[in-house]
Amino acid sequence: MQIFLIRHGDPDYSIDGLTEFGHQEAAALGKRMASIGLDELYASPLGRAQTTASYVAKEAGLVIQTEPWTCELDWTEIMLDGQLSSIWDSPGEHISELSSGKRVWSDETDHWLKQEEYRLRFSELQAASDQFLLRHHYKREDGLYRILEPSTKKIGVVCHGGFGLAWLAHLLQIPLALAWSVFWLAPSSVTTILFEERSEHFAVPRCIGLGDVSHLYAGGMNYRPRGLMGNHV
Image (cartoon, rainbow, N blue to C red):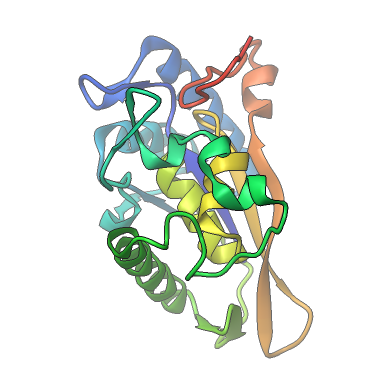
């Protein structure tokens, strides 16, 4: 099975929709995903994700199935360097594990999961992910997925930047703080997760493509740096 984790197109947050350029991105994305041959299409209930998914649904001939748990995270914003910031946009220099050189990670030491509020919210996301994959016949056991029924489905999930990285952290067993501080997903980008089956018993999620925007380049466009907070040119 493959999951195509798709960030929504360039957003207009004031209307929870897309900018004019975001609509162009979504149109190019729709054509690209139709060529892949998706079997199922899911989306966050937020407007910018639904609008993006509508382009994919039209081109691929699929019905959008709304998954509330894939909504953008509403975790508490924090004040950093005098500015209010979403926690998934926090600068890497604030992550003690990155600067210590020790790189020792666990749920107890992870920069954000040290705090009970975030640990609880992340556990809720993890549980929802596990239920979603169980519906697709993969049962999570100690980070691996027991194959209840082999699958070759291609599944598209249109969601959000902060949520998408948190979901990847769970699927790939990457520390949450590390996923947020060293990865970034461009608007309309496609991240491909293959549930690799080397035995008849277990599948292991492998990222075989992160943040791909080749559909934009094919249409003569470039990505927009939404959520990229540093010195982007």
